Amino acid sequence: MDFKKLAQKYQTPLYIYDFDCISERFNSVKEAFRARKSLICYAVKANSNLSVLKHLISLGAGCDCVSAEEIKKALLAGAAKYKIIFSGVGKNDSEIEFALKENILMLNVESEAELKRVEKIAENLKITARISIRVNPDVDAKTHPYISTGLKKNKFGVDVDTAKKLYIYCKSSPFLEPVGIHCHIGSQILDIAPYRDATMVTADLLRNLRALEIDIKFFDVGGGLGIRYKDEVTIESYDFAQAVLANLSGTDVTIACELGRFLVGNSGYLLTKVLYEKYNGAKRFVIVDAAMNDLIRPSLYNAYHEIEAVDKNRDGDLADVVGPICESGDFLAKEVVLPPLENGDLLVVKSTGAYGFSMSSNYNSRLRAAEVAIENGKERLIRRREEFEDLVRLEREYLEGANEENR
Ligand SMILES: *Cc1c(COP(=O)(O)O)cnc(C)c1O
Picture (cartoon, rainbow, N blue to C red):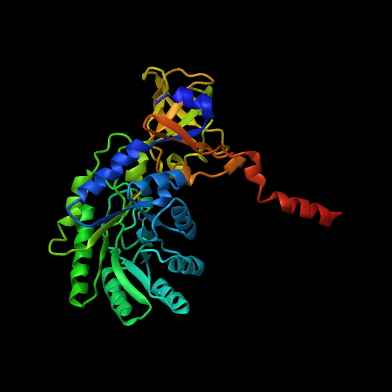
């Protein structure tokens, strides 16, 4: 990848996504579930750029959305309604109504209270809502506590007994049609055992429901497959599929999954320019033009991203790579080996395709980066760099109003 040319053409900080790498990941999962009917969904929140969505949709992906606006983005990018799932622990009334009116595949319901809201809204609309219940299987995904979701102490889903009760309730309601079972145990999972344990719990429930003549069509195993940021040993698509399928012999459910990070994480690069080097005592800092508003994962989760100097050798001295924001938590890496650097040198932060741009902000009134796609060796802009006008557009009119009142 010609980072120098890209920096000249599009300036920095710049997000770059390798679309061929995304295709490869998606196809590997699709292939792994080849023996069954499957709906491989993309968790939109990982990277919701419309062109990224369009690319995955063109490969056959469904979309797992966690807000009405994510559903709108998926539709705008060309997603089929019957391939859209709506997840999330706190859907509000207007979001539920929107999803029901759009007639998407199903809503993943996370509590009894939510189920009752969905029922009420479906009744008002005189329709039947297709739903699945998110089961919290109480297994430990052994990942970072902020991204673990499948334990009783987490806010997500309901326990198996409650789930069973809710399915039975659905059966008696003319406005609710249970079509799926859902479970998502966390993110950046590197160990296959939690998947096996979780699907054992939900497959058991599936059989129980069958016995009650509750016909579940979609077995949604969630997302969470981890990727390599440093030297992690990751789960192969094939092994993931096998762990899921092992518990499902004798059933003909469609397997659904909702992968985010696994599909897009390794495809992304954040390109940034060195502004200054400085030493505070013996401590070396490399100050760059990207910051925590562009990539918050290091600050938020203490996440590691490999950083490489473009066109330089790999050895050098330890340094913290920090951004211009007025926070000590504004760093992209701590104690990484980098060669001597000066103003204008380029650094590339790797594996930033997931939860990079999508978690970015305008903090410090910084303009958000541009995004570029590389496909078949060709690059194209998929989001222009923000301008000052974008930043003030929603505030400016009130400023003028206030001035008039003060006169
Ligand atoms: C975040 C999320 C995902 C995707 O997680 P990844 O770790 O990116 O695969 C899938 N399903 C639900 C319900 C989520 O909240």
